[in-house]
Image (cartoon, rainbow, N blue to C red):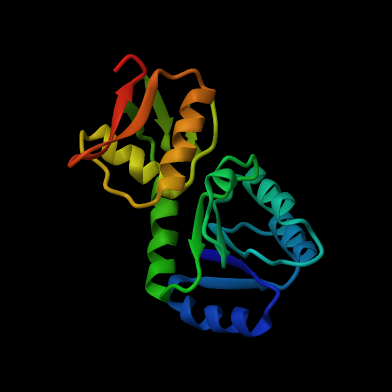
Length: 197
């Protein structure tokens, strides 16, 4: 596996280069122009961006990386809000600091498995294209949103405490004209319902 890891902090880059060494080849960049140059010249399996990468706007980097059909994970110090999950420049996954290196490795593996999947999920009247991280004909999704939809597609109630994820999903479902929404039911957790329920 070949990983592009970008962060402004060179000590952080060195630390993660050592921690992820067992995963494959780690190529580092400390600014956005390096990232753009590297993704144009080399093939990577996944890109990991710290939320602060100088010289190129963060959203531009995510868009350019996704245009290369390269999965991207964003490391952030902020809690991920529903507003952020609704942005056009949506990475495949967010991971909030602090986290263990094992957590980052698991997210990398989950993103790569999802990106290579030929499966589709159905939740209510909505189809989710896993490999595209997208609602069919609609908005992009993050790994966490896909996990929620996957559980719902299997008839499992979701007990996530991440209201931002559910809120963002409901906005995305509405945007594609779906009658399906995710509602909280007492003692059951979040479940899919149709708008007439």
